[in-house]
Amino acid sequence: MDCSTPRCSVWRELVLVVSLLACGIRQSSSQIYIIPDTLVGVEGYRSYLVLGNAPEDAQEYSWHRGANDTEGNMIISYDSTSDSRQYGPMYSGREALSNAGNLLIIRAQLNDTGNYTVRVDAINGTQTATGWLKIQELEIPGISVNTSSVVEDMESVAAVCDTNATNVTWYVDYIPVSSNSRMTVSPDGKTLIIQRFSHSDKPLQCGIEILPEIIQRSEPISLTVFFGPYYVFLWTNPNDFNGVLSAEIGSQVEMECVSYSRPESKYRWMHNGSLLSFSEKNITLLNLTWDQMGRYRCIGENPVTQLTFYQEVQVQAPWRRTIVTKTFTISGTWVVLLILMTVLGGVFFCIILIHTLIKHYSTRSHWGT
Ligand SMILES: *[C@@H]1O[C@H](CO)[C@@H](O)[C@H](O)[C@H]1NC(C)=O
Ligand SMILES: *[C@@H]1O[C@H](CO)[C@@H](O)[C@H](O)[C@H]1NC(C)=O
Ligand SMILES: *[C@@H]1O[C@H](CO)[C@@H](O)[C@H](O)[C@H]1NC(C)=O
Ligand SMILES: *[C@@H]1O[C@H](CO)[C@@H](O)[C@H](O)[C@H]1NC(C)=O
Ligand SMILES: *[C@@H]1O[C@H](CO)[C@@H](O)[C@H](O)[C@H]1NC(C)=O
Ligand SMILES: *[C@@H]1O[C@H](CO)[C@@H](O)[C@H](O)[C@H]1NC(C)=O
Ligand SMILES: *[C@@H]1O[C@H](CO)[C@@H](O)[C@H](O)[C@H]1NC(C)=O
Ligand SMILES: *[C@@H]1O[C@H](CO)[C@@H](O)[C@H](O)[C@H]1NC(C)=O
Ligand SMILES: *[C@@H]1O[C@H](CO)[C@@H](O)[C@H](O)[C@H]1NC(C)=O
Ligand SMILES: *[C@@H]1O[C@H](CO)[C@@H](O)[C@H](O)[C@H]1NC(C)=O
Picture 1: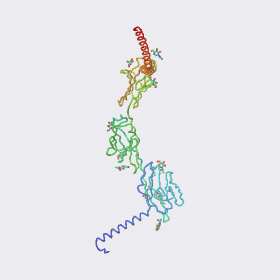
Picture 2: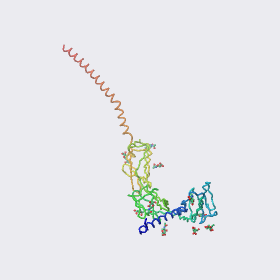
Picture 3: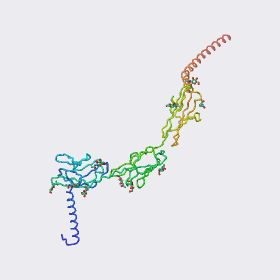
Picture 4: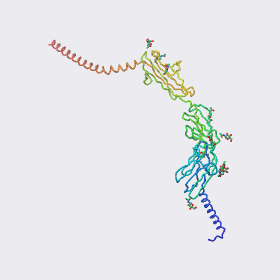
């Protein structure tokens, strides 16, 4: 190839650069290093110091505090030929070394910050690498809400995450949430507004990404949610049937109003349409009188949500039902007898009539003759 043209010389330079690059990569690939991403940790979390480019013929790995690899500052070492580990003077009980030579520090402390040196002994020789590990203070985001109590399905709540982090995640009932029809996250992520706050919308938490894929959450914060009643149930003794309670004069009747709400409902009772001066959830009539019969209504009202429900029962003497039952029983049995007697009576009457007629005519014919 004729390489006197300028174009060709450009090609030659390119080929040269590429081969230099390849050479550079090969050179660096034979040198061990500590992967830079692993040199930042957070207080209280685990930190991995990951070894890059470890030679295949490595026989022993050892990690040291500081910038050199003396015995006196050794933390831990691993001998792959005998599969054994040794612990040095800098071992704190929180370190572990994997078979691939990576160092794990659990529950990192701020004073774990510093230089770490790894030494790899291989058949082809010994290499060392040093890296500066920085353990950051753990930032726990703060959280605040603009109210401590809220009426369910009525009021809105604004929560603010107190942090300088830019990547805030929100959790409602421990589940991550984003803006939806009822919830709005502000553009900077630091405020969450929940409309028509519900019973199940608690607790609230915000979280920040302190390390890639590691989220530190705030304390969970719960609000007092006022709700209900969703219904009122009227329990009676004796039991009512379809809202009708049959009780004998002189017997005992108990009625109790039951509802579920927060705060506890206030109760009122009405009898035959007039309000009783009575505000307990139950009424006991020890000795039922005619006067105490009639329609009872119990009203349960939540003073905060202002929701009100009621339930009614009719207290009456059992005579109406009994008479109806008796009449029915009598007719059932006696109707047959009555029909039978009517038929028999009819037949008997006919026989008597015929007999009398025959007798009468025979007498007349007798006369006539
Ligand atoms: C050891 O070094 C020699 C020459 O420097 C090389 O050919 C060989 O591949 C190396 N062995 C390993 C396991 O790296
Ligand atoms: C190892 O490093 C420490 C400081 O980290 C230094 O005081 C000491 O002299 C060094 N030792 C050797 C043998 O380099
Ligand atoms: C950490 O090591 C670097 C060299 O790798 C050195 O310049 C620095 O002074 C060391 N720092 C400490 C605190 O030993
Ligand atoms: C590092 O700090 C912890 C407390 O966070 C302490 O208990 C420990 O003794 C310190 N270690 C050194 C080597 O200073
Ligand atoms: C809390 O913030 C929400 C949304 O901005 C607002 O609707 C609500 O009235 C606030 N509550 C209080 C008690 O200020
Ligand atoms: C946010 O940054 C400001 C100024 O840099 C500082 O005063 C404030 O304490 C920081 N807040 C948090 C929660 O870190
Ligand atoms: C925030 O973090 C999430 C997950 O950790 C990621 O998917 C998202 O891209 C990040 N957003 C920003 C603005 O950093
Ligand atoms: C209501 O019921 C409670 C226990 O169930 C009882 O102690 C109380 O005396 C009752 N009140 C009335 C007015 O019957
Ligand atoms: C119920 O009231 C009636 C009339 O007031 C009375 O005669 C009767 O003794 C009372 N019975 C009981 C068990 O108190
Ligand atoms: C309520 O009505 C019933 C009939 O439904 C009656 O027997 C009773 O005397 C009435 N009581 C009062 C206090 O009005």
